[in-house]
Image (cartoon, rainbow, N blue to C red; front, side, top):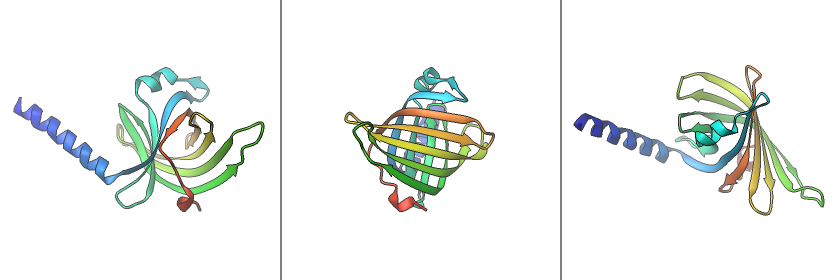
Amino acid sequence: MKKVIILIFSMLLFSNIQAQRQKELAKFIVLEANSNGIDYTDWALEKDNYLIFFLNEHGELCFSNVTNGGQSYGSVSNMKHQGIKESYNSYGADFYTFRWRYINDYDDKKGSAIVELTKIYKQQAVAFEIKMIIENMDILIYKGYMEGSLNLDKYLY
């Protein structure tokens, strides 16, 4: 029993230390998820899927796709931005593209993706769509709403 308590305490301490090293900038709560045209929203909701931008312990911008089963995380590079002004027919939006180098903590697979993030400024909340094209050409699309504020201007290339 002591070993179990020590193990649980160690895991909690490690996750707390990890959280202190990372500064979360914005969280994207997933309400819809799609992989290569196949809806997997139920799975994403069941797994509490969300995406975040954070700064690592070196102050570098990173991105993570998180579920209660693990995460894919890594650095962001080649960030580009285009603003879209609000009009009578459409909401204002920000469109970002970037390269994401990631590693999965659940299977140690490494890879990279081109990511397109659209933030849509609605009256009720900031909605988002994130489209990832990973190296094997799979296309993942996530939609939902954003928590927090996010200014990525200093990370643009």
